Image (tube, rainbow, N blue to C red):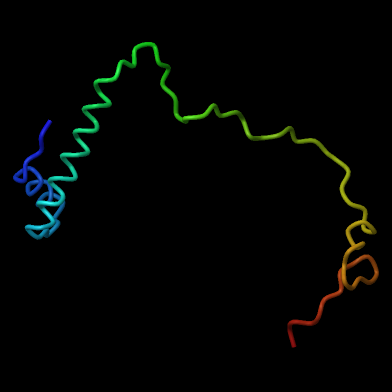
Length: 95
């Protein structure tokens, strides 16, 4: 399939794009290259290939919702630079 400059002009007019002559020439070449690549892909034998949404197999990323033990207050505060009464102590930021 070959795309012509006239077709690119028509599409740009429909899209209300004001393209310069250089842009039309450039886009004509780029679109022609894209269509050429699509033609190459269409020539591939895809008989028996299962359609996929991803290139790699995807599995459910969710884990079971299970209750697990968390940190104790002492463990959570063990590396705190300043702690008091089971809480992190920070500098006042609001006057």
